[in-house]
Image (cartoon, rainbow, N blue to C red; front, side, top):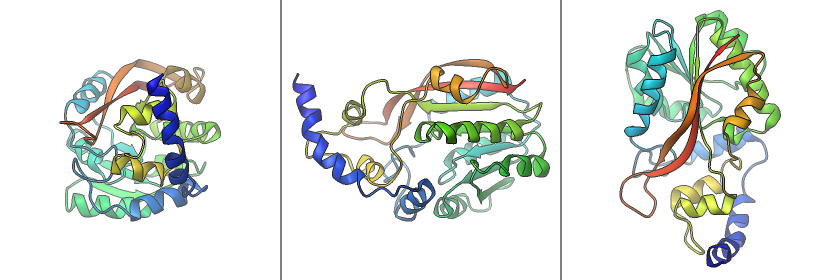
Length: 261
């Protein structure tokens, strides 16, 4: 009961923060990234912590499914941290994001790293998938924490774009947050309390689309079985920046590796 009371006490502050989020997702993400002053474990971006144990889960999944002679597309690359992690494993790594400010930051943080590039792309535009495939051929795809902030029609369109990108030889590694409690309970798990919301969480609530859960059920809806074949799936732990404790904050997640039929 006390936990529920504390959740209810958080409602006014959360509602006040969320009311400032632009309705247009592209505008929201541009506004978010243009205001970022620091990234990394001590930075402002909730999901941008140092890459550690979380990556070990993905490395095993990629080794079991992906053709490493193909380039890789990092969807929703943000500041490019995971694009840089992917780059040594593939002949080329391309990070894409809907926010130009994110792409600019990714370029700044990456410097002159070979075989890494970034571009501003809206992957929910039906024309982007065929265009990328024409340029690069079949690609592998890495998606971390994108589908859970999209609504149903956007999820379907993004999945269709990825179907065009991977072609016959590529595979998708999808990983998303999959917290099964209500949004206020989720915020509490990240360190929020009445009158005390950690700054990275506060920035996310007030700047980006409201996240949802994304697990096996949501994956089946976005990636229908007649078009996609699941190689492996299961739970993962997604790491976020420290909020109220030592080390990173672990968020329950879901992963799937998939190829096209």
